[in-house]
Image 1 (cartoon, rainbow, N blue to C red):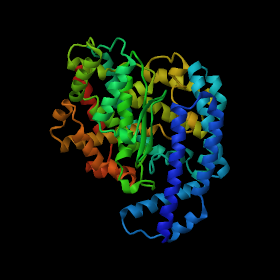
Image 2 (image 1 turned 90 degrees about the vertical axis):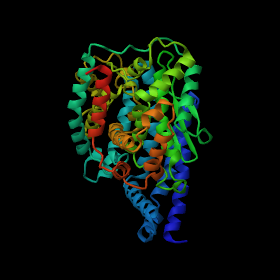
Image 3 (image 1 turned 30 degrees about the horizontal axis):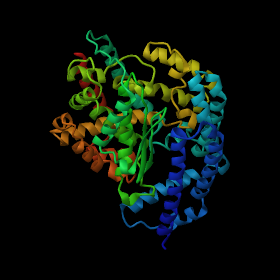
Image 4 (image 1 turned 135 degrees about the vertical axis):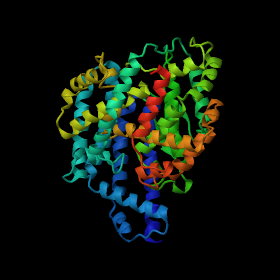
Length: 490
């Protein structure tokens, strides 16, 4: 075999093992017995050791030096393989295994601390995770910015300075829109009542199928923190049920379907290669956010959903479809990021971005994190955090070491704004299709423009080739101003 063929065969085995490790993580979140946490941590650490050894094998370096690429996919595989090899060889095997072991255990302690509203239970584990991630960042940065080194794992090419500048441009318009909306004289009524679990899950499955999620290559389960897992022929989603808030279940499902549809749609020829998954977390979030928000919360689609919910639950007490649409998009002060409306969501991300940058830089200590969170939340949202589960303990990310991940949520919103502008340009009958519950046109466009390419291109290039222009925050901010001005009569 040629050097490229040997490299590709080796990569396929490594990718397959990584998928197995991913399913261990899925099991931990959905079905693993509570008492198995300590053993699972050892299993995850052992498997990470095997994967790290494969990812740093000197043979990879030799193949990468001599491999020749004959087409665009091969060139992209070599580009990504070189990048990954260079990053992986900077991290000692001991450190990679310890991060996997500690974060697996820390996740369980976070869940217990969250359930008990007790930051002190989680604090020692956060300190351990943070120390390990700072050590990893130092190894990767080689004298450069620690946060940038971690961010590069999720959004190659992005920098904290660039994202910070973009957030600085976005914040004034978001704050002004929020203030105008909350001051509007006519506020949409909230949804009230009890909505049985079985009905919510039936509707969630219907939504997943309507958006094209392939249940022959996936499944839907319940989790405390909804997520999507896997790629190719095995892509799983989770959701959650709150019987007084069916939107939580339905829109969590649509969000995860966006992620899953991306993975299911990647060119099958890329399976178990470095191209066989999304281009970045920002691009991934663009799919989940456009499925959930620009499509799922549109006036046209919520008219269809209104009838489906009335068929399942009876009268909703909201009058007509226009009132239902306003309720789906209702803006109100709240603590939880995953339940935030489109106007305020990115402000939640900006808070986390600033705090985790300070943690990684050493400017903020874990013992001071809760106070810093509460102070910032009061300043940004005007209300005091009532308890840790509504504040610093609400997200799983830091327990599993995902420092640098949070800003990709807003970057995904920015990408989704660009994609929606281009989608409306190319599909003039989009609203008529959505009103009929027909998502085929929209999801086919996204599949062909974005999803099928997997990681063939760099993140920004993926969005630019889909839209015909370089991504920027303008389309998202314009979309939010137009949508919420119409709902609130601004």
